Length: 135
Image (cartoon, rainbow, N blue to C red; front, side):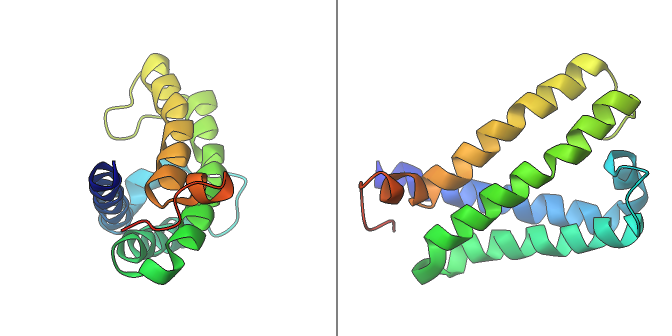
């Protein structure tokens, strides 16, 4: 099970790094998911890109703080639900999310990402009194 959790953490790290790089390369496209009522929207897209890259790197290298990284990443993934809801309610397209059904599916995937972050960092089990060492 630990090997699977390690692979899941690496996969999540790759996903976060890829998403972060995407924010930097396709900033204008990501504005479609950024609520219009937020100030400094372009800055937020770029900053979130760097933050996501940082999360990905931290998942890979910051072993002694892995659980904390899991908690903070999970919280971040909850916060970005605002963008998913905005995209759904405003019917904006972004990277093949062209229908409301696709936007709903993306929104439904967000809790999976939160659980994934908690599980692969050992946060879920540590809190529940489970495994103490996550390799």
